[in-house]
Image (cartoon, rainbow, N blue to C red; front, side, top):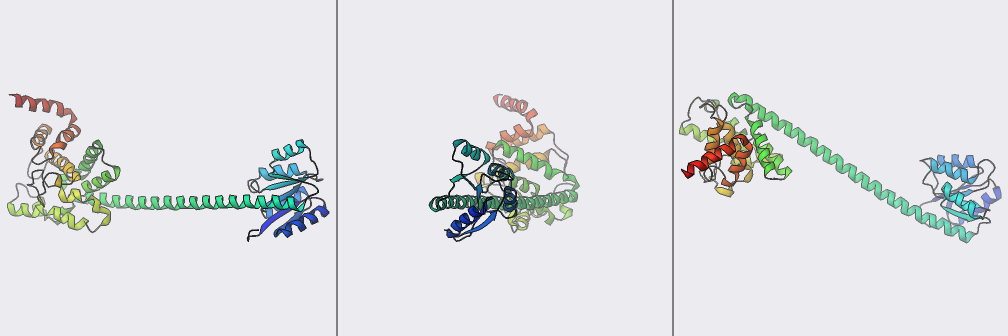
Length: 357
């Protein structure tokens, strides 16, 4: 037998039968309780769930079929294995027992060998059932912990992103001329990324990078940032440092490190004449190549301290003309079709017409 005690409840109105069954079960090292009626048997089952019930059929208050049905209808006791013991040997009685929910049958008088076989069978079934239940509980607990961890990580990510949005708004408040710029370019960047089927996790990092693309400008003096008119070469040298300031500010933050490509590289140019590192072509990360188009489009079509906004047609023409110079030539047409779908067909006809002339 197994080391864990195996608890059996005997429900029978005959004291001699209870004694005989108890004696036989104790030889099998079972812990035995008894009940002398159907009602007391139901109460005993509910007070302490047994591993097995031996249930007599013929009892004066409630017959075994009724007891079995009542136990099966109660969620607390529904899974307890039940062996019905009966002097009735007809097929109809056994069918009635099956309908009531009995698992096994024994005929009176009970033989030790048959009882031992049935009890051991039920023990094995119980062990397997408990093993399955334990595994299911462990799996459910693992799923719960995994879900809790996912929810916690999501909550942290959302809190970080709200902080990130706060930083972006703080930058906009510092520079009223570009208010709303970060939100606009972030949304347009996502639109292009989605058209390119970039994976969602990379899109999220691109959104974060776009929101923080100008974070390095906190290191640029207001006199330069808000200057009315062109910057001197010395002032441009200071202004160009904002990409390096962004890298130095964000790199220590592991959460934002995957989003660094845009803040650090969005002023690189396809032909290698950009800054801070003079990257050329596909040396420039894809996220930065996409964002460069978005950033220039938004800058050209909105007022700046040193100039008024260009028309959308002028901005379209400039970006188209910068294929293979400032911008990745493979991205320009797609970008323009997303940023200015109403202009693209007409402008493309003008361009092709001009070439034919």
